[in-house]
Image 1 (cartoon, rainbow, N blue to C red):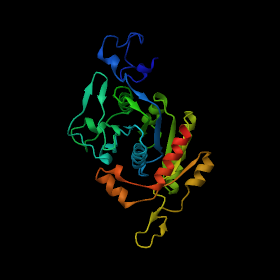
Image 2: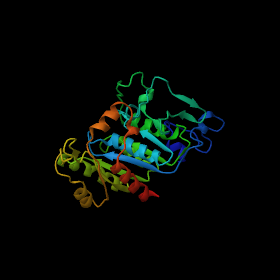
Image 3: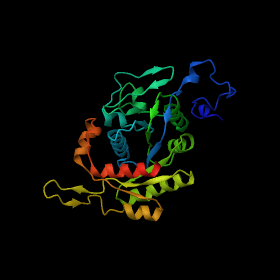
Image 4: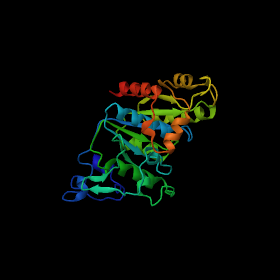
Length: 280
């Protein structure tokens, strides 16, 4: 099967010869100019650990470093990247013979999400697994991403159809695992780690999100969700520990305002530098 067939939404029903598929048609030009050098998937075992925020922070930090970045929002039933980056679906998507033209953030990050296709941002996507997987494949192969240094894929929580599709169909260079300090979160995140290992996808490391908070009055470090366990869990799982990120009300405010790109953090910059060093 050709690379084009792998990203085609009709591959299961298609009876065409792959060598002739799309010849002379507009379909054959989809994704023609895409040159995506590195694909990083951001994964968590369960929801609520800030995986999507971490995705946005990684993408924003890379863009501030002068990299060409794209974000593929693969969390089809719970998309949040458009909201975090302040991009609405009111203007509508544009396309060309080379694919759907992704909206661009203030820092030049190209973003594709199912929310751009919905009449209202709070409309639900009520699809079964095959449709979810098909949408992810189309976002990869039928979007005019063009030249990117890094594609950051925001996976849905868990180990279901969409993470499996991404690991099998996209050329993933590595996975970043996100968790929070609670025992329950780490219990579930170990499932995600084991899935990545079974799929032979390199794990770049673990990020412990919401690891602590800094009191605005006395600057005391408070572990509001329990003692930090990230380094210990990473060691037990045989993966690298990328670092800890704080719970920060300023970040929450900026995400709600669609201004995640304005957030500055020495911690996330150090983590991104570690990620770059692992795949460069």
